[in-house]
Length: 186
Ligand code: HEC
Image 1 (cartoon, helix red, strand yellow):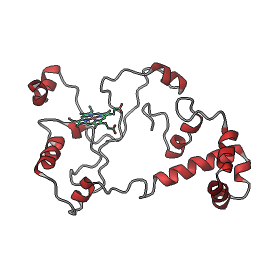
Image 2: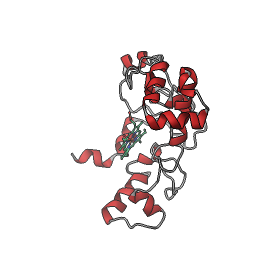
Image 3: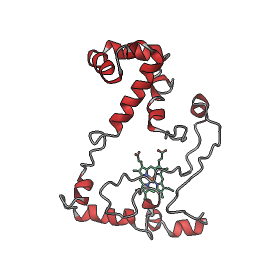
Image 4: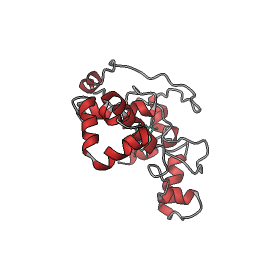
């Protein structure tokens, strides 16, 4: 998780932003715990869920915060799958002709190849498609060196890919422009 893959578990990711100067920039775990105590409903819910005194111990409070956010991210409320596209997949909505054309192009292997990277499920009709294969693809965006350094990630770090279902062979530039017929019409 994160753009550089530095977190392996959801709890590790959710614990990142509060103390990261590039994100929420809180000075330390004690101030995060204090911020939680300030909020009446958190002040009640954290001890109820994680035990009395949890918010008085900065380490434990911070771990509880990361667990709570991760638990929320696993709920259907966080990912309700209720877009028009999701409803279409469940047979509850009809796509316009334009939308259907876009869908076909998106999943086409001879025109756009979007789904080579933006597809989680093997079937284009899978009801819980998230449009990502959860892998890291180099699409030519330069590294943000300052941010990598601030996040303690080595420059040029590449993420080993495991469990790949659709390995992609490197293409020559002639092949890739032949695969992008729309790019030449501008
Ligand atoms: C080689 C892999 C690859 C292919 C092929 C690809 N993308 Fe992407 N796409 C990415 C990556 C990686 C990102 C994330 C870039 C980032 O956030 O820095 C991205 C980001 C996006 C986003 C922004 C998503 C967001 O949540 O911000 C959209 C929209 C998108 N792509 C659409 C497309 C479409 C449409 C196509 C086909 C025409 C396509 N992509 C083809 C890898 C790919």
